[in-house]
Image (cartoon, rainbow, N blue to C red; front, side, top):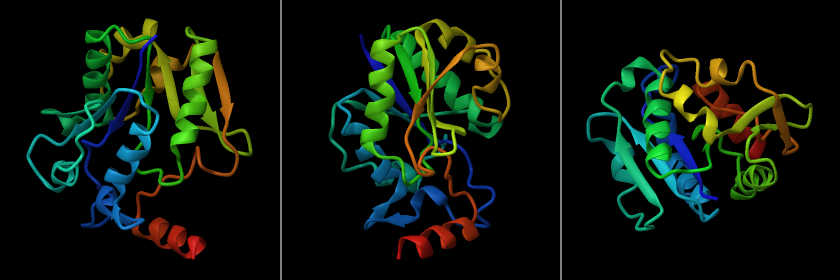
Length: 199
């Protein structure tokens, strides 16, 4: 059973007012690089989708030599996260993977252990949709789709993620505790609040 992870990093940081949230420094490195390293710590194959033009996001991954990492530019990234998910679905199906774990890279509290916890549930329940929850039981990320749903990802359009694919599915929760599964940082204010809380 081979499970893959995708970090969709092809979109614009449109709410950051000129800053790139994925290049914000965390633990002495760009957030994207930090989350790539956390994903690679699981030992699973990892796809990072990137904007169509070369830039700082691709450059910050230049020193990563792990063979499990593949980066792909997404020509139609302007169409929303669905473009990254379509690319990821093709990647996973090309490799006959048993499932695809979607990990949003702007969630800095997510750890490699969190990803491993979601992956462990997949081993036990390979046909189920699995979604991480926070301490309040709210669904968030990672979200894991089994192989049987990957063809539906290829049909996605727009910027709503995989919601319509899993809307009719029974979802198996994976409790992570705290707000790790639901805290994303996509505005300067959210970043400032997060950093203040960490101090």
